[in-house]
Image 1 (cartoon, rainbow over the protein chains, first blue to last red):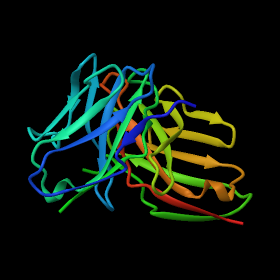
Image 2 (image 1 turned 180 degrees about the vertical axis):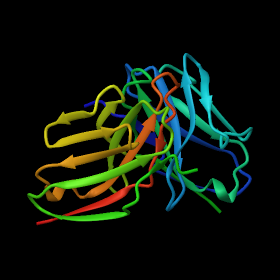
Image 3 (image 1 turned 60 degrees about the vertical axis):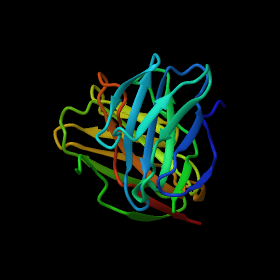
Length: 113
Length: 113
């Protein structure tokens, strides 16, 4: 069964450094998403992406964050200058349509030191 | 922000019996609901969904019930199996939006042999 893949599984970065999290969505899916889960808290929506542009973003997704689909398969989340509070699990998801189930990757654990 | 609430952090059930997981929501504009299952170190896995035009959806051992007047949904697992032991997340969204899902905090289900 096709799946969403995320790399790396764990990323450790110094505060203030830039980090790029990578995702390969399911190949026939058109909508892409990033969520995050801070330890002990809910899964929170960050951003949705369709047709090479952001379609919706949450208040968490400030100017430090950006997303890109650099080629036909990858979908990336960049955090420009990481803060301690960016430490979390980051999940990528994709769906065929917005009213179809989103399928999630196994996440990247981001640890900011 | 508690738009989607799962008030039971944990539930323990005997193998073969019914598991009932509950979820309440506050925003009456939600029109699409999903249940996800999550094992440790993995991403959420889609289980079953229901739109607001239905009050029941069934898929094998899993049935989701929606009570719009009470703003309540539940997931029934019959019969429960030890492999069902996981954290279950309820999520809600708007069909007309760009896919932003609001998640509950999750309920940890333990199915004992």
